[in-house]
Image 1 (spheres, rainbow, N blue to C red):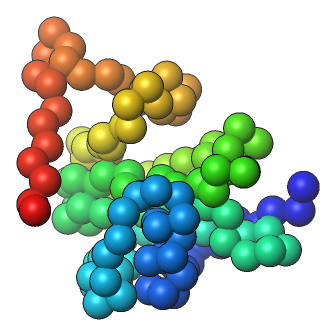
Image 2 (spheres, one colour):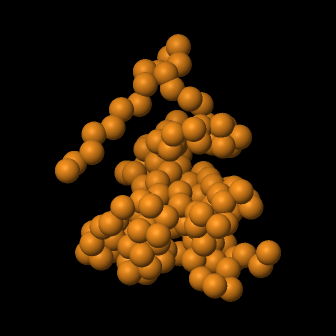
Image 3 (cartoon, rainbow, N blue to C red):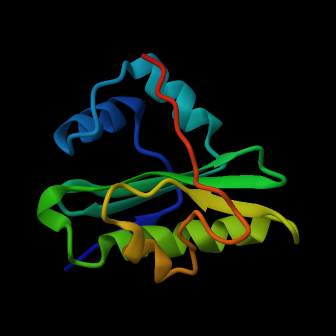
Length: 137
């Protein structure tokens, strides 16, 4: 398996196509450009055939950081690509984040155990309530 990890975003066009192929829904190229440009950290995993995985860190860049768009091509899942992406994102985020910052994520259904391996804690806890989401339609 010859895979490279790069600290750079895909092009907006590739991001749009990648999301679609992976079942993450369609967005416009303009929205993709703005999202990628606003990222704090971008990580891509490439093989000889092109993009096979990606992830981003978003947030205010000071106190709040969130892992977002952790996406791996279906045929590459279960081969350590997600781990490579998370490790690279965490390494970069921890270089930027000051002591006391929060690093969070919203895991896909049944993916919580994957993120727990990296020190993330499921909510709710005794200290924190459940995370919540609202989708803008």
